[in-house]
Image 1 (cartoon, rainbow, N blue to C red):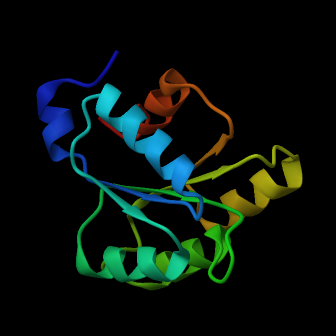
Image 2: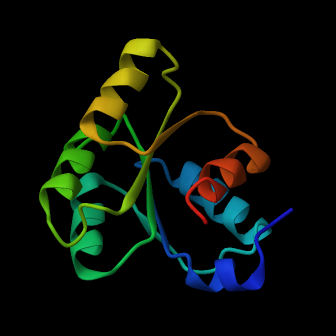
Length: 130
């Protein structure tokens, strides 16, 4: 399981979640997949600051966070011209159609329901690689 070396070196991910344990799990999944360019943010404000400062291939963001939640961060990213095309995956334990459709309408490129396997995460990331 993993990506080819060229794909691994070119991908830069930002993982956003307010729970440290989830960030650690996501970091471990990324390491298992061979993805090394991974930054973490503990809330939407920190994530937006990082996204404005660095160029990410993909932002993977929890939906339910205090303050700037996943939908708010998605809106903010889509409003900023130089990062508006960044691929954005919402992750959440909410699997209802209304929430998933809301994510799509706001511009999410994909949605993954927690908990998920490393393989499911890899499939979501791989969908953005040509």
